Image 1 (tube, rainbow, N blue to C red):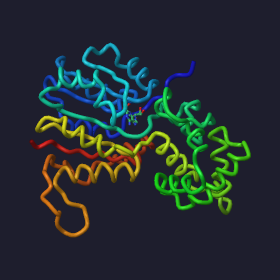
Image 2 (image 1 turned 90 degrees about the vertical axis):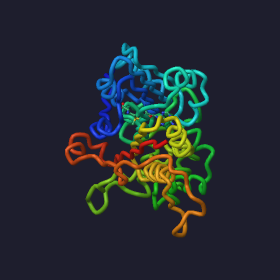
Image 3 (image 1 turned 45 degrees about the horizontal axis):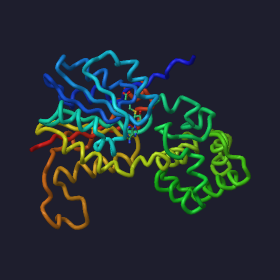
Length: 319
Ligand SMILES: C[S@@+](CC[C@H](N)C(=O)[O-])C[C@H]1O[C@@H](n2cnc3c(N)ncnc32)[C@H](O)[C@@H]1O
């Protein structure tokens, strides 16, 4: 049996320095993953702490349970950070354990190493596998099902919007051509369709960023609806904090970061709309900690290259 791929928690030091872990802390981790941040936060916490970890991926929950399962302070729930708020088990935990509000909420967005490195999950052009890409393997359309419902315009729009890929239109055309000829079943088939438009080697040199990166990101975001209700989920989490409690949001690409930044700025009463002044005064629910956000140090980037694009944004609830 293969060993579970190791996921190194990113910006761990910054998370530990900026999320409060007081005695009897109440912590909500909305993207538990393999429990890396959870393990480190729990190591700082006392015996009266209660930690709720949520993840939509059954394999991630199983891995986290294996890693931390014997810790009686931890509860693990299945769900998404946008919908779990309506789950009776989640509401019961909040009412019982955190009726005075949460001390800390963590959202470490995106995919884990477990998802990326497991070929059968179909997330990566580096590992040949079926075109799946679902974070929740128990529900929803796979990437192949999703592609079946696209026409050239909708696919190109998704690749452009979620991948910020300038060659979205010819790539969409190439993917659908291969799909209609019955040649699209695996991640390698998808990557090869993309390489017909954007080759990996130009003028005898390998291009620095694999040309499939942006399109894979776009399809993954679309399949999992990753950005659809991120802003609402952040806002909901902020409302669940106690005064002085903090939220930390770690993003891995500019689209996620823009949503995290704009949402937290709005909740901090900062007006980013057109014109110089807000049409009406915005309520000031949080203050921003280190408003530019935290980026990984050079040492972290060198030790853990996937952390390169990460950014942590932290805000503290005021009232
Ligand atoms: C970057 S990993 C988290 C890693 C974790 N902090 C650790 O140290 O092991 C992101 C996790 O969030 C989960 N996830 C992504 N979107 C989600 C959503 N909308 N709701 C719940 N979990 C989600 C993924 O399944 C994945 O396991």
